Every structure is written in structure tokens, then in C-alpha cells.
Image 1 (cartoon, helix red, strand yellow):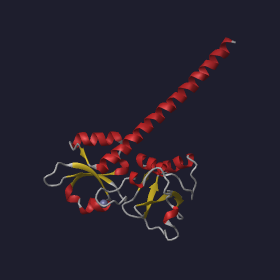
Image 2 (cartoon, rainbow, N blue to C red):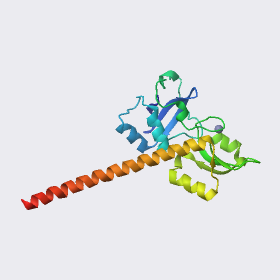
Image 3 (cartoon, rainbow, N blue to C red):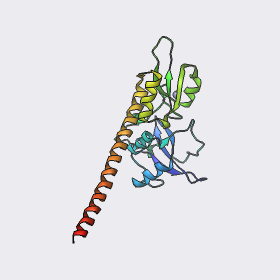
Image 4 (cartoon, rainbow, N blue to C red):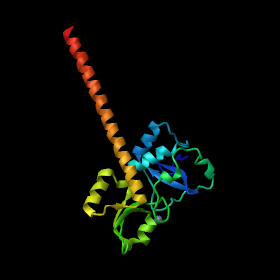
Length: 205
Ligand SMILES: [Zn+2]
């Protein structure tokens, strides 16, 4: 399971987890920290992969272009991920070419003799295969509306499995935000109507 950690030298947090047998570091935004705090996750504690995936969907957890320079020698990998986590490792976004989770980008791939298609590539593959790519956008800035607009503007409608999975994450995040907005609006309306109702009652007495 992922674990929340704090950088020693600065007031920022990061997440360690295990992917494909390696320890992977995710950076986390201040909003992401607030979200984890609301979920009862404290520094040093483990949490379900579903929460990490939720942070990735919203762009609040992301990887840098390469593994940061952290001393991970004290960590036993098996302590990071329990096999009974209901969300499998394969749910986490990775590069379609090499499987790396670092520095993910959405790219438009133009291979000779093939229709262009969208794919998710890591920072290293973005550089090494740059001649194949005509669009290259950091994945954490993507949203459902952005992706739909990009598809419309670029005319590239085909998505490989990695891009389809990422589009699925964005779709889920969009629906979660929509539900949250509706719930908040209903809560505000309920409290407003409740107050006016009580005020109305008071004026009649
Ligand atoms: Zn790669």
C-alpha cells in the first residue's frame, strides 16, 4: 500500500508505493495533502491504492521526469504494498512503451503506415521517440474537457490502451467532481431554505 512521507528539508510531502517490483515516488500537491488528511491519512501511515489513484485522476499526485534522489535503503518493498489491496497495480498509469510511471505525457504518435493515435509515454520515451510525436502534453494537467477538446482540434480520434485507460481516469474524476458539486449545492440550498423557513416561522410568531 502507498505510504505518505514528509521531505526532511522542506514542508512538502511525497508518497512511496510499489509498482512492477520497484519503489515509485509520487509528488503530492497541497490540495492532495488536504484530501489525504480528510481521509485520516497521517505522515508515515499506509493507505489504499484507491486513494492514490483518486489523487492521480485529479492531478494532485504525479511523478517527476525521473526518480527523485531519496534514500530508500531503509524501506522493505513488501511493507509498502499489501497483496490484498482491492485496486491492482495495473490500475496505475504507466508508459505504454516501457512501463515507467515517471514523467507521463499524452502524446500523438505518428508511425509510418499507421493512423495517428494518442498514447501515454514517460519522459524518457518522449525524448527518445520524439520524432514520432506531434503532440506532447504533461498528463497531470489533463482533464476530461481538455482531452475531448484536444481530440476535436487534433483530429486524432484513436487511443491506444494506455490513453484509453487514462481517459477513463479523467472521466471518473469528472463524474466525482460533478457529484461533489451537486452534493455541495444541495447542502447549501438545504441550509438556506432551512434558515429562511425558520426566519419565516419567527416572523409569524
Ligand atoms: Zn517509457
